[in-house]
Image (tube, rainbow, N blue to C red):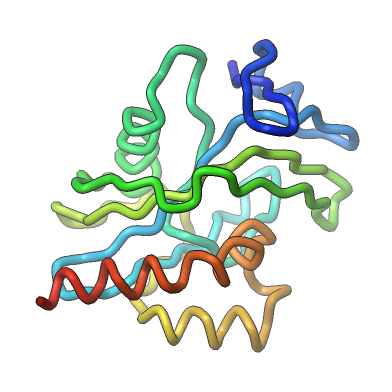
Length: 178
């Protein structure tokens, strides 16, 4: 189940996840999370080819949907473990009001109120192959340059929130090297 929301992100109901990603998608609650390691590197992942939406594109470390009644932090931790087999700490919401609507090449529409988080990796990565086909550690500048040069290679939510997120990422990386 996912949480349906209005244009401001306020809950309006619930729906089965399988029914909210189609040609006409109701607005629902999701999240994106960027992971930084203790060396200050930023993780990007390539979505598995088996993913229903945006298969094979590069994106932030992980994303997902909180289930009704689940806190966002618990949802972020759950998806970090499921997608990457990783434990995380210092989960911080830096873009609480981000949202987007986009349609992938197959015609499936995303319509999400999607707060953006930053967290720190505290254990080795063990990516789940049905979720993630590749991982890469990069820098904030490297990700920004790559997404600018080839936005089609990245998820629309990453391209959409990266300009507002980049200063928060740079600050989070700097704190780890202070």
